[in-house]
Amino acid sequence: MYRGHHRPVQLLIDIKNDGVNTYRELHRQLDAHRRILTTYAHGRVRPAAVTAVVSGDRAARAPMEAQGVRHAFYDGRLDDLAAPAPAPASFIPLISGNWTQSFTWQGDGPFPEAERARLNSIVSTAHSRGQRVRFWATPDAPGAARDAVWRELLAARVDHINTDDLAGLRRFLLAHDR
Image 1 (cartoon, rainbow, N blue to C red):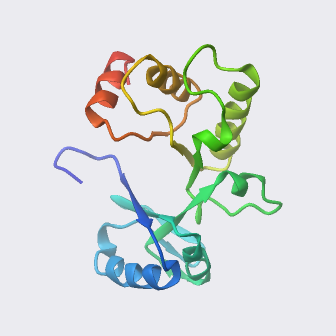
Image 2 (cartoon, one colour):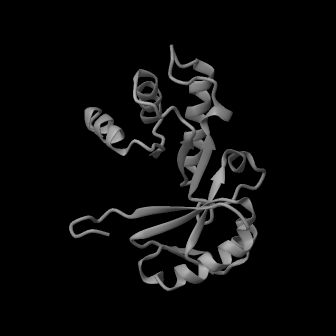
């Protein structure tokens, strides 16, 4: 992506509405950049510098699943982990969940053990399937509560920390040797 930078980048694309038509247009746009994009082609994934992951409007799923060749992947939900026949990481490389719908703890006081166990189970299940994990709607105001949640996310090996405070996250990660 950048000179001297050899790690791939995940581009999270949030479709807000009209998922089917928006995704079809997105596919046309991505096709023009296919040489730098991770591509799924007939059961195989060809890694590249950028992996586009489609999030947001769930209606985008059907046209994506129907494609034999695509340059984007699908952002799964926690329900996808519990599905009787879960979609593979070649379709859903990322599992995302709303923190406030999954956990009551917002960083104040100790993290309830049952919730910690649930978090660890989510991450363990996703990782065993080759999927990455992120949560949105985590506390994002600077302070002890946010830092406590971030520490638990790191300890559980959550792959992406969602924030609007990139400088604050950078300081936090550097202070925690990440």
